[in-house]
Image 1 (cartoon, one colour):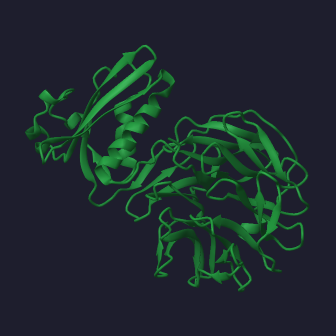
Image 2 (tube, helix red, strand yellow):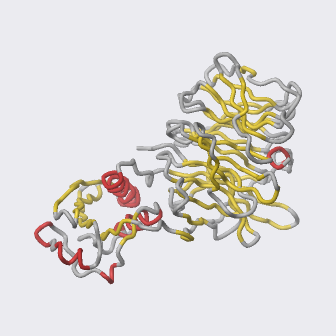
Length: 430
């Protein structure tokens, strides 16, 4: 089966140098009625290594919620409140206006910005962000978060990170696998691990300070965790058979995983302090892909004990288990939305055909397709619940694609080199 055979490959160890595989965003669909906003080039930003205005504009554009005004269509370039003429911005159709100024300071840079409601003719946000020369993109993403939250009421996720696996062919049937980390917009990627072995199932701890993943660099698949600040690694499991699908508990103290050391693949929980294992499921069928509920009291997982892969839930207090999905011939890799209202998962209809990403409302049981490509897999949800990232195919290559949870906005993140897959969206990091 797709979700099991992917974990049974074994390739010899080969470490290699990392080549850039920068992700680039290609917008494929926007919201029907995005909010018009004008972000005027910031005073004092000319000559900087990063275009802060463009970064903020792109962040808001990629969210699908906003339509930034092109610079060439602006009737003025105000940098302070006394230079703001609301009639100019009404004339070009902007609902909101952002102006600001970048100042060089002893320890770095400061961006002071203001947001205006054009229709209401009033200042609604005045704020500042600071950073070093190397942290200019961080400043811009943080400003984007603040603007987004003020205008939508939802916390912005532009300062978050994503993990993904890049695979590049080396020739003679060999590949280089790189576990990459990048900004949420695909920029500033860096390698976390480089190997000649497959790397699977990267996942974040709730505090964003460490990650876990599966690596085939030994004689069998093993689960590792790694501290991001120091790159210190720890091998958590290396049992005979499968060691796969790590998933941190909401408090970060435990790790759910799939092990087949006692027979069929089942769900286990490891206490990370003591390394003590607790077996959660015990069935001759395949039980895999655990995902914690937001309160940490239950785990969703994939099982074929009903005759086809479906999503089940186990209550950790009394081990009560129930089936969650009933529509479709195949449902797998469930991820819970941040508000707990639903799950995103890989879905295939009763008629067969392609694999898509679907959203199921847990209260009503309704199902809605979010993706429309073939062989979509590995959904992961932004920490504010507004967007979902997944792996798909385009032009014979594996790429990452994103869609808003309401299905209104879509964009692709293809890599310049190699295939990209296995995405994982970080929690909030600031």
